[in-house]
Length: 93
Length: 118
Image (cartoon, rainbow over the protein chains, first blue to last red):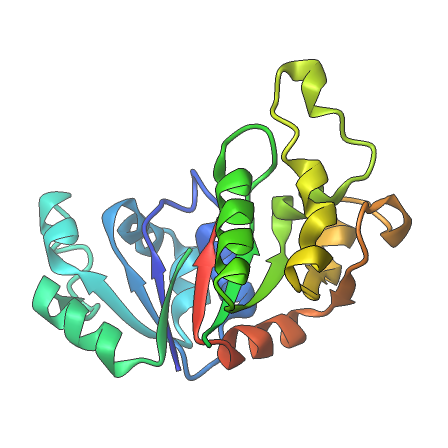
């Protein structure tokens, strides 16, 4: 069980695409920084839908996206730490 | 002894990421860690044997990949799909590698203790 951490926008970087290529269905994906923007685009939202998904709350609120992304699981930094301990390893792409 | 996987996904020369990944690999191996390397996406370009980084003032860290066996780094995997995406064949590569499919890479990432992406 791996926690995949994506910090970059899919428009800037291939991190999300590669993560999705190698992730297993029991893995979880955490989006932070510009990585949260992926959820605004239908193609990426669809591609992420089979996985357990978490998004760092401060990054969503700071970008004014709380209303737009109200259906995703938002976590704070404490929960981020808890999740990284819960999974076997964290891969930061 | 930890199983450490270093995954190269960035192109060589444009950034220092590849060199950092290689430095970490050699350093970890010399501290007796079980190191494996995985090349995916643009990272596969690190392996082209005809690279001449000095022409564009790049540091030739690429040739250091040939030293991997000296450090007992024997697990070097390359993503088959990425080679195909970039139109490359096995014969263009500078070091012996194992070409594997996506599923094998997923399983490898699962099996190691840590994965660091460069």
